Amino acid sequence: MSAARKKTRPVSVGPVTIGGDAPVVVQSMTCTDTRDVEATVAQIGRLTDAGCEVVRVAVPDEEAARAVARIKKRISIPLIADIHFNHRLALGAIRNGADCIRINPGNMEKDKVGRIIDEAKARGISIRIGINSGSLEKDILTRHGSPTAAALVESALQNIRFFEEMDFHAIKLSVKASDVTAMIEANRALSQATDYPLHLGVTEAGSLVNSAIKSSIGMGILLNEGIGDTIRVSISGDPVTEVAVAYGILRALGIRKVGPDIVSCPTCGRCEIDLFRLVDEVEKRVAGMKEYFKIALMGCVVNGPGEAVEADIGIAGGRHMGLLFKKGQVVRKVREEELVDALMDEIHAMLQERRENESEKPIRIR
Image (cartoon, rainbow, N blue to C red; front, side):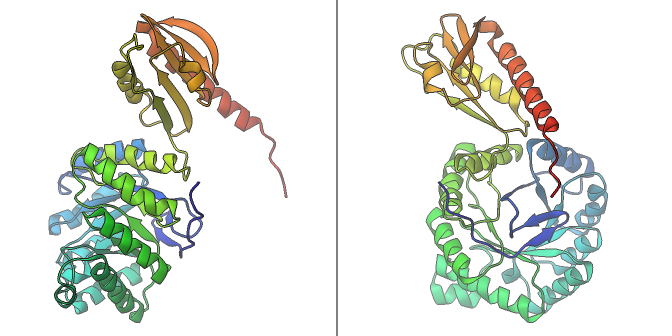
């Protein structure tokens, strides 16, 4: 069981609270050209449908900064503007309605960071301080010799002091590294040193499989220790997959139960149905569902229902057929080609019944 989460100070990103008593927030970043408003809005729509709660967009130039205003009008989740090097782009994004700015202060002169802080303070928005190997201050990098965990932490604490000297406290911290061990060590140290909310992530994590492995280990260890307030799984590819992996990590740790949890056997010589196709099709059909429930997809009628007794609903396959069951009890036998449709019918009926039961619960007046 995961440790109780460390209490951090709450910070607002639009209507979403990060830190404090809020749940761990799942976020992602678009891979579209922000200047292409239509493509960016469409991708944010897909991310929102998948359960993304905060989205970040790159702001590489003034046209992208202006596009923030048009994008904001057409989306329903908070928008973070990602800025590198140019403080004027940060000012432009803030004035165009960004709910938060992400900057790497080590890549900017202090007086220019100060201007960003003043503008954010005037507009009442938060700032995410990003620290990674590419943004370390030269003196810190020289002193440590390489972007070690200690170097990353020193940079973060130095920047926090500067922000606090300017009386700005709406801060989120992200200390990322492609090295999983360094990422873990740095965030552990920061969690001890400060109470600002932490954004967890393993940067440059790679393809879906590599990223899922690195992110699950890095973020999973920290989250299991009660460290972390918001997460992003960085994947080279469609960002919608980032959201699915993020919720999978949170579900596996029992931190947030959002979306279907699919359990499937690795198959063996007893499997007599096309389980791989079955799992793939079910995953596609339940994608985007927000309700939590456990689905078991088993390739064997001998052990399937028993092994998946804790699942809400599932299938145990046989030769050209399968048993549909709920809570380990067989409901009926279904032909293989009808299994997915039958399963989805039962899932929709189960969720409808759950909603009706919830709506019938009496409201307690205290």
